[in-house]
Length: 468
Figure 1 (cartoon, helix red, strand yellow):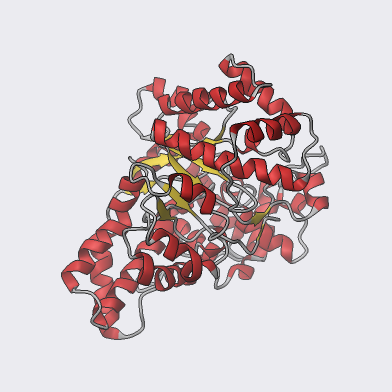
Figure 2: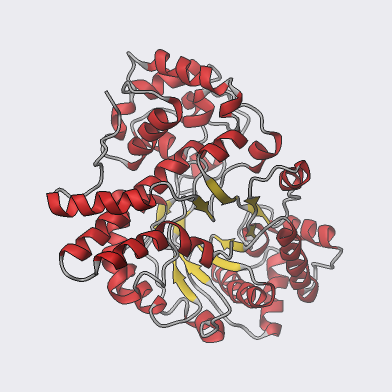
């Protein structure tokens, strides 16, 4: 029995479902453009076999281990590495069995759909995961992973990925991207400039990170002028390895456009570790505007990912470090927060600023009206907790009436889980085709237009927005 229903996520009305199915067939096989994500470039550089099913599906995937942890399963029991040097479970099959025994927890979630898709479409599995089938499925995946056809570059081609962007820190040496380039492989794997570690005074090791950036660029980053020059040099270096975008993960969407003397004074306090919480936020806010101006000069598309309360649990952060499932959405203001940035550069048609949100209440009230008027501003797709059937549908319903389709940027999967990429794009295409079919059925869109928009949402808008 197949794990996947052929009509999954399509409307239940037969007439609308038929049109959604036909629309989906027209985009199903389009190449995947993955312009923002967190896959490891080392996979593609070294092209080594993935080691085992647990390390592929469980241990690195915060969607998976946070759900299991919510039911009282220790992260260490799932093999999640500890930052404090503590012991974690090393028996991969034991971890897998624990995952399988509790797989029922994922019923109704996007993770269930993604995992089932990967099982069936990538590994040919048709049995549902449970404690009874755990070993059989583990062995089937493990046997596949030994084959050349399941190495990262082979899967890249099999998944029909036209381009994929990873995300690296401003002080990353990009060694794996250099190795990919020098290998002569024709897979298009590019990087994205993520400067959080050197623009956020509250980031761990901020002062040391800024010093490292100075050493990498031969600039005096103890001065404001040298610091800004160092950013420009690092951005230029990232572009040599294919970067077409920068990415900014800030606690809020706050922006400022400060006089240079005031920005320099804040920077000096940040280096000395003397910023108050508000001053640190003010400096981050100003740096978004600085980065936007740099984007006008160097052409990098600017992505802003605000509104996550990072590392909510002090205990988990101390034991396991950052990004261990304890990042929580917050209420986020955009109208007042983005105004300084948009007043400075929002009218530029040669600049693209893509804004994401985890606060869905802002779609129709704030983000769609802003993107519906400022030439530089575009809306990113539903992100993180809302990367789901319901989340995507809500986004289309709340944003389209004001921003239309063409002030959005298609879909990006934003994932660390390589085998989920085709699944996530499949879901997005099904949801968009269902939404378009409903517009046709209710007389708001002509059928020929629906086919054109479906192509745009699945493929063209992402290429255009990210300049790929």
